[in-house]
Amino acid sequence: MYKGSARAYTNIALIKYWGKKNEELILPMNNSLSLTLDAFYTETSVTFEPNQTADHFVLDGVVQDEKATKKISRFLDLAREKAQVNWGAVVESRNFVPTAAGLASSASGLAALATASNAALNLGLDDRGLSRLARRGSGSACRSLFPGFVEWEQGEDDETSFAQQIPSNDWEQDLAMLFVLINDQQKDVSSRDGMRRTVATSSFYPGWLASVPTDLAHAKSAIATQDFTALGEVTEANGLKMHATTLGAVPPFTYWSPDSLVAMNLVRQLRQIGLECYFTMDAGPNVKVLCQRKDEDALKQALSQHFAPERLILAHAGYGATVI
Ligand code: ADP
Ligand code: DP6
Ligand code: CO
Image (cartoon, rainbow, N blue to C red; front, side, top):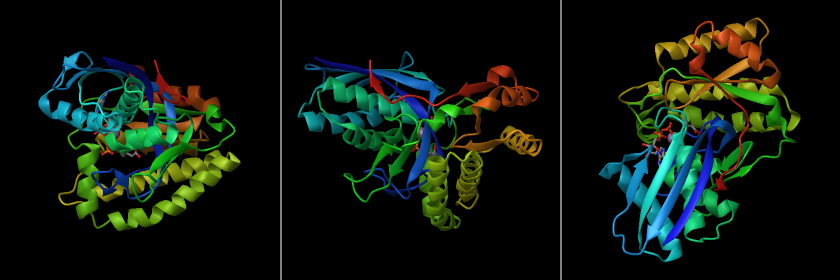
């Protein structure tokens, strides 16, 4: 029997990953840049047993159906192949984050599973190898191995597509991200399906893609100079452009709900009265607001006029994935 357990935190992209150039290897169309957070995470243990033929996947105490288990099996096959082991596995995972709600459960979930598998099967993968393995499960997961600001270099093949931490002199410790939980139920269009449809059909997609390198350069120089205004502005603009691409897809779709717009407008109003904050959104209706730590109480107070306090969750810079 081989067993390993791990914890990994979610990350939220400031420059978004949106679209794949290779679906099988999960190679992205563009580089992305994220902040790993401390508020949401996944704990996973995986046990490979010699006389086990099938895999079993239990998430939050619920035995998962064939489709969900198959996804896990395909991922475990990659680890089994590296270890030259053909044993079935039991995967038990707990999400301390709502699942499939646009809050990055696939990032923490697959980063935890990759880290647990590496430990269980003694794969001996280094940071880069682990990031590459996690990427095969969910693209955003390759960034969740690392703390702080992280860039995923798109690369051109399996070897060259991985994430690494960006030096920041710990500037991320001065920042905070407030989550406005608008809906924590499972979304209708998964990230995977949403980006696939957008790449294949949206006439706005080429415009998005062309704009990413400049946004990324601005974000990296803002981190290097600790310029919060510059980082906030490019974060908000980049997220809006990503979401604009979905409206040009066939058929069109959006992850926004009326309350997402309420939150976005509030952020703009707060900025006008001198409370500096910027929003971003992922594949779901929830809004994430980036601010400086010194302003987090004022921001939470202001947003609680419109959203119930239990719907506002404060996060700070989080940790890399660890074996537990
Ligand atoms: P999210 O916004 O939560 O990342 P996605 O659509 O990207 O949503 O991914 C959701 C999928 O991620 C789930 O359907 C499941 O396949 C996978 N996932 C989420 N949590 C876990 C976990 N703890 N272990 C394994 N897979 C997970
Ligand atoms: C909008 O990593 O969840 O959150 O690679 O298909 O599993 P798959 O998708 P996923 O996509 C995340 C998309 C995003 C932006 C981001 O996190 O960069
Ligand atoms: Co995801």
